[in-house]
Image (cartoon, rainbow, N blue to C red; front, side, top):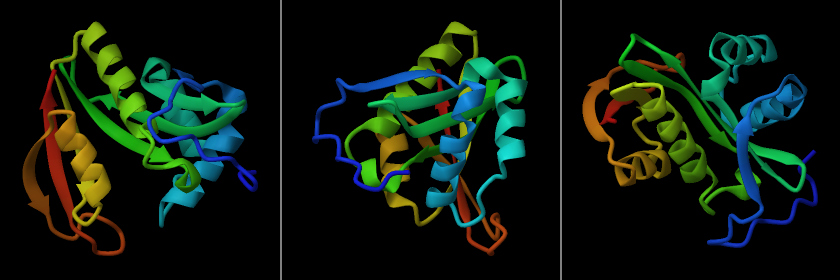
Length: 159
């Protein structure tokens, strides 16, 4: 699927478009999920997330390929929870995740949410750095949060 993919030049996101997830994106999003996570969500769960709150399931598309996605769900009327953020390993470190997050944050604000919360692996330094750059604050450490026993860090952003 991604073999022969030409990297997006650093600092150039002109050809990356963020849009709402569509059913036909499922195969590519599933491939990204498997490339990014030790315990990937099955396609059925990804589809359920998209159905539960379609306006908060976004994909980044470049040259007709899905290169990343972000999904969030409401916890309450004012608080949303980031379910997943993933960018294919071959196109990381060029701003795709930031672009996805900025679009998600804009949508959340427009929908009246006041806070976004998340958990992130304590050793996922690139993600933690991105979240901090977006204004997220560190919360508490959750010991053994993940199935493999890894710890998580909670983070939140006032919108």
